[in-house]
Length: 228
Ligand code: PGA
Image (cartoon, rainbow, N blue to C red; front, side, top):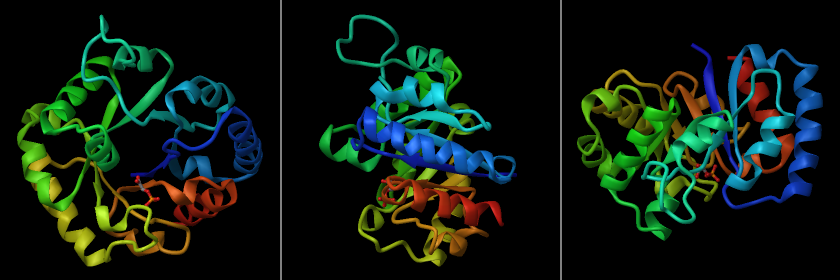
């Protein structure tokens, strides 16, 4: 199976810097064999999903960084899963530790996001950390859990430059597969071109923050993954 690499731009970039990034990315990608070897998805902030999608070809997809836990309706400010699906969104990151910390999302809210995504045909990427993997899995029905992608996102490793020890990632990945079923499990936390090969044997892909912001860093990373 191809490895999945999701670029999580978080609340960075604007239309100008996105266009600059995309120009370089698309021209370099088009001259490479990478698209046939790696599943790449880009997760910009919601206002930029369409501009990024319009620029993409080579099989690269767009992902949402979040999704409403509610269906379409009277929920001011919310982008619901059906709206995102209509833009071509393939994956939605749900329950990122930054959403849990700064927006007070809990396991039940994340479970509702999973339901909304699956009903709309979007694959949720459920982010979990060591302490609450079991609690998060328990909040999602087994049938829905089996249709998710899960990302092991170690808080101590996110944005710190201290990527998690591979043996620990291997252990947690196995635990996640026991709880959710045989789903793809990504690792996220200071992944870069320099260290991604360490996780080749244990992870089904990677959620990449910092190393996705500069296009050269991200190209270097997907080039390494394409060589696996
Ligand atoms: P990082 O972010 O690569 O900057 O550690 C990963 C994430 O939060 O998804």
